[in-house]
Length: 271
Image (cartoon, rainbow, N blue to C red):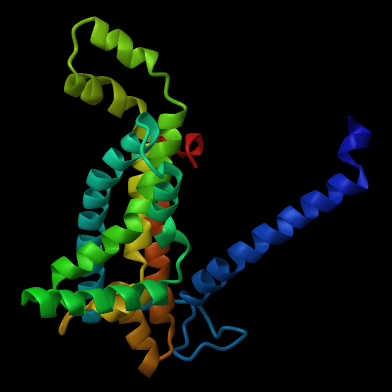
């Protein structure tokens, strides 16, 4: 066992894993470090450390308004994505659908499609919808939420489907044999059993929506900006640690949400 642990192949594999992890974490570490710099213009070595940039980020109206809009859009898109994605997953797993594998691949396309391409396509679609119906779709909150829902649904389908594939249906059959109807069985048996997949889908869908930039650039209306857009606009005129502080706040909030979620629902079961 000791010889296997010290074999060159295992050492190389562990080294490659550590290098990959370091490469992933390095930007987060650098941004977090930058947020505490005292000087306004980032330079190395730092002249000192301060917390004033966190206060500056919290008092920046564009950041606050962008955070509120991103939060609202993310929550609504996640709820709608769950409402649409769960029935789609049930249909794909439980029923024989013509072209089922192709439909499953189609539902996952927004995950692999470049954001700029998806944003352009939705922008053109909303313009054509306005011309055809006369409804003010482009630039509206409803249009933005609908677009963000498209990037939430693939996470819901992917993770809920994984939960359903490993679900023992004899539990549902036992409940129905004892007199439970289809809806009661779904609410009392199926949903609690696939809860890890639902929570993971909601969490990853929300994070994807909250941090979306490319698509949102095409679809936000006058006077509306999401937090990623607010940060991008800020960087056009100023480069100081306030942007890093705003990013650290996002990292902390998302990280805390994942830790708390994993405490009650083990995300490792489906992710």
